[in-house]
Image (cartoon, rainbow, N blue to C red; front, side, top):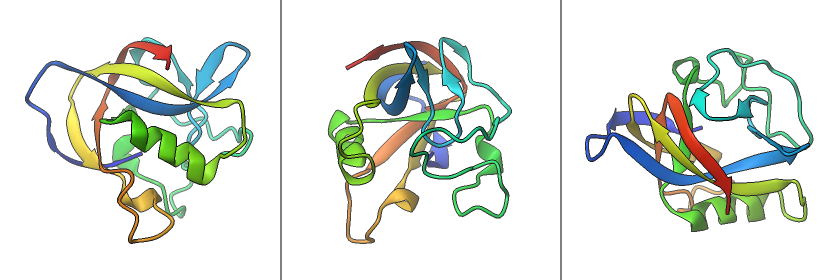
Length: 139
């Protein structure tokens, strides 16, 4: 998840990189457990724990909870940021992968500094969030 900032006006779609868990040929959020598939992003977080998930972000008392994020997902602008995220949090887990994902719908700039382990890390840079997944494929 990223902190939603301002509107992204450059294009109607944006293609970036998403860290996901692959199970049974399907892709899931490592944060919320929602399934990634073309179409509108699920608006209700199901709270199902998945293997090595970061947290249950449906709990309003959780550090990562962002009510404004329901019905949105985000992608990193650069693949190296997704690779670094996996290296820091999920090293050695073969089911955590990077997807190339195209988003549309109310595109917004954001940052993900909340997820860094050290404040000096500047790995995650910027992301783009949207309300619709146009397409996705493994990198």
